[in-house]
Image (cartoon, rainbow, N blue to C red; front, side, top):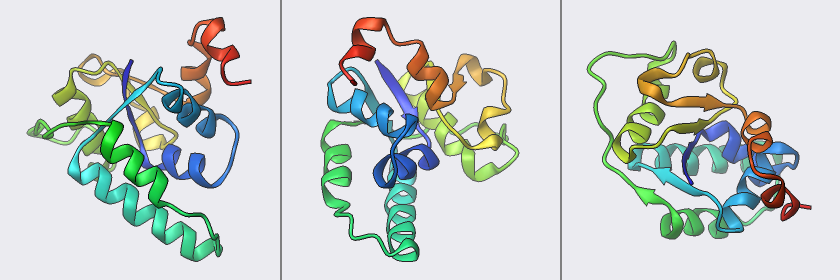
Length: 142
């Protein structure tokens, strides 16, 4: 299954637990392939480093970032022409999904979750996305 993961979900997953962390566990189980573009990866890297420094965490970020470099489907974003998000910086997630032909974006950012299936891309919170997994797949996360 292909999906774009917004930065807020990734950062929450790396440093804390709950639903965002479960999304990354699905990826680690091989049931999810993240879609990444260079602008998205750059934001992941910068934001993870910023949060690590601000919160005083000792978390080693390299396994997460290297794992994404290797496991993700890398795309060249499809320019939208005009912004579809309230925050134009979030358009990069829609552009990556379009480039990969993905139908899912997993997000917590209200500037994304407020959208109603732009270009047929469903935007789901981690909880909503996890709830759609078949029961057998959800059991792998326990």
